Length: 409
Ligand SMILES: Nc1ncnc2c1ncn2[C@@H]1O[C@H](COP(=O)(O)OP(=O)(O)OP(=O)(O)O)[C@@H](O)[C@H]1O
Ligand SMILES: [Mg+2]
Image (cartoon, rainbow, N blue to C red; front, side, top):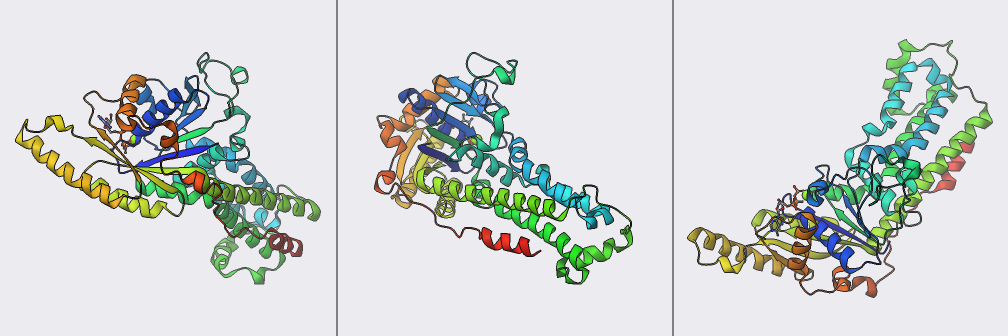
């Protein structure tokens, strides 16, 4: 992966149209580069823009342009599946779990992928797809196969072609609040899962060893469960001490892998990610773009501001009503230029025909980028050349400390 372009901004300002037009334009101008366009909005509309059914399979639009409207549930499942399976096995080997059957359903519920927050699921997909070392690692063999130009949904999965490696990823993000959640979470899901898992494991472990030493927060739950305790019960998955420890070690290793991957992705986003904010020349979207810039800066380089849907000056003098809008647009246009003077600004007029289909999208891209080179589109501020190795340093998890804790328990 060489570039990750992310388009964000207020609802309805043209994020999907501009991100899609950009992907179409780059694919046409750079036939040697493989481009993947991904919609991260739950209200997917890439199918409408391409006038073609897309959905959860990576779908080939032109020889080098691929698109997907991912279903976050599926990716969360493939990402957390192994971890939850092993954690469940460990719980089932515990005598306490057998004594208090209600605990099992609590554990099952909290680790089920359907119960993860949507932002986290989307982020898991985002992680899977941009993972530097192995771009499709989390997705698994089934998802490695795609619907290409000469095959359809009816083509059996094992006969479908394999995915190529992508050079450029273009992302259509949801409006600002959810966009920030996507940036934040990639650094975070493993920690959240880890905290949850370790909390449950450690409570079970502690309570098995010594009822007195149960951490404070678990006491009410244990007190409530007291009546339900069946002292005769046997674990449904009895394991000897060594197997139990190996399994726990396995879980820790999995969590550690996830942690490393989160760090790698945060660094990748900082290194080759480029946020492009879209606004129309009106107060609400201008205000939102200002907010989005500040909130996103810790995660990704904010490079571009698109001013979209400007009324063409040829409309001036036609009606009083239009003139009023034109003058208000001009006021906000100037404010935007002043506020975002450190960013590259591209402007696009309100096109007469709705920009859909490859032709419509190409027209919009030409309206936006005019004679800008693809180099400029990909590197509008030339930042990557100046600082190609920017990395985010974070406190890695101390795995040795955790291993020690396990050995002691
Ligand atoms: N420059 C333009 N000229 C004409 N129509 C445009 C232009 N830009 C966007 N549109 C139209 O405006 C509408 C909203 O655009 P789009 O769906 O791209 O916005 P969005 O920011 O992705 O919205 P949402 O937040 O709902 O996802 C669409 O009907 C689109 O065709
Ligand atoms: Mg959209």
